[in-house]
Length: 423
Image (cartoon, rainbow, N blue to C red):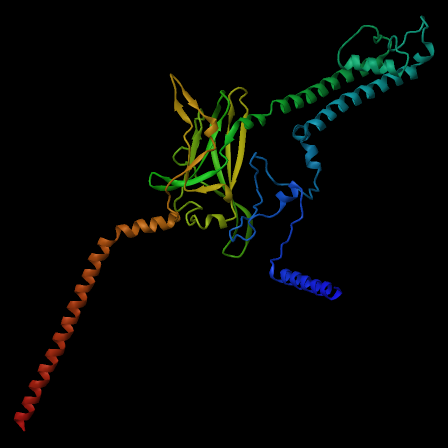
């Protein structure tokens, strides 16, 4: 019985060993949280894995450039007004409150010192004593009088007397400086509130740019629109290509800027932006996309920055909106879906389709290759005529050479006959 049990155990162990050897190994992946799973690289084995391109200008128009090691910081103080306007709101409000509080405390301290040095504090309640400021009995009351003087409140309880010339001079100085502080700080707040940056939030650019044929030419296109009913006056559009380059002399220029013509010579860059417009760039010999094909486009490390400028109709201030497109956001062989429809007595814009595109038949070749193909298609007739002329010239040359050889042979035969006859 013991031997039977031992043999059964050995058989089971051998079976389990064979099963372990023959059965495929199963690896159980650890259970990860959702954020960690999302961060895992996807499609790692694909040869055409997209490389992350660092943006020069973000999609919301903010420039992705930080200024470091600026030693001449005093230049910011020479233009203190612009520096304050450019600060964030929390710092701007803090400076606004601190400036007024410091000036009130400063002049309140001076009013208290004048009263203290004149001895007004020792004659509080003395009706025979004429103080510099009536009813000023301490620093708190001096601080309140400073606020009333600078803000021209004038409650009438604390007043300056005519027996204090230094107080009269201080009153004039505080009134003038208070007016300057009010003009500076209120002007700073007004400019910051009326900045047209928020107006640019209603100027929208399409999420993607497209490349397709238009009027028989390969074109790069993107769409712009204005969400407000108040229009942008004298609107104009510009585009820049941001791409590093190396000169013939070996100099490396990082983030080189090249102009992209979007209708400067024809006036198409000046827009009447009442409804969304498609901005087109013709890819010709002057275009930086002249030699870029569909297969080569994903390999390029470039960025297209588009800039829309104009004046706000309501305020007359200049407004600028920016956006950018990297290579992964340029769709080859697509067009934009129309958004403008004719309704009963008006045109309606459907902004739900503003970013939508649809695929269209577009050659995968670059504009240069398309131009070469077109030129070759026009050359066969010329080539056939020239080839026939060349062939005819070659035949004539060969016939002349043969005739010359026959003539030489005949001359040689005649000479031999004459020699034989002489002999």
